[in-house]
Image (cartoon, rainbow, N blue to C red; front, side):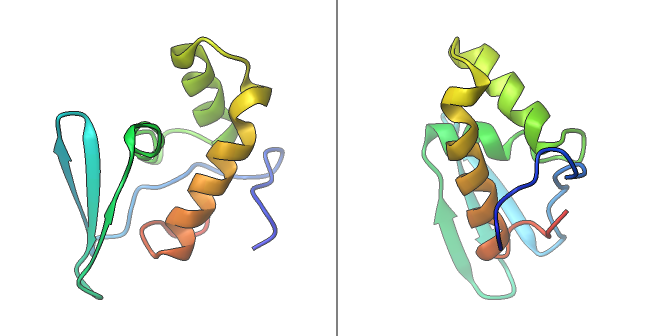
Length: 96
């Protein structure tokens, strides 16, 4: 995939219609109805997922999470990038 390009990437999401999201106690599980496949997210991945609604670019997601976690965007950029790539690879998000 080659990584997320923060300079040129558009908005992330919303997820395709075959993806069903369930949230329990702040953690998200994703269900791909086409493949009958479930992905259980940890807290950080859940936070990233909840921002993949079509309103934010990868850089904006990184900035919001950095502010929330009281860290710098540079500290979490790779983690956000890798998580977004996993969402695309696993079919839970379309490439933006």
